Length: 84
Image 1 (cartoon, rainbow, N blue to C red):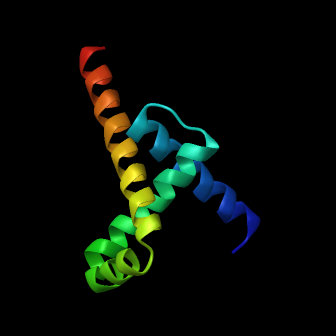
Image 2 (cartoon, one colour):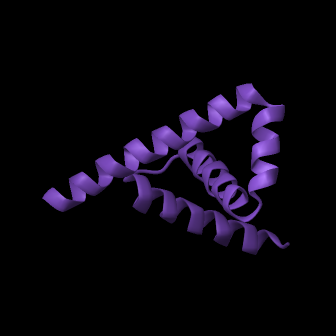
């Protein structure tokens, strides 16, 4: 991968985060990356997701927190954009 691709992909993730959550910063971008990849794994390879959840129960709890935060921020953003 060349640096230009990485920068362009990061711009895509930043815009996605902004549209999804109403704001973007490095921490939120990282959470969105983790959430998106975990969601894909859980759908495409559910046995792997289940195995990881069992192997790392503390990480599973942190993942649940990330998912809840993203869901909450997304709902707030959708409510805000409906009003405006």
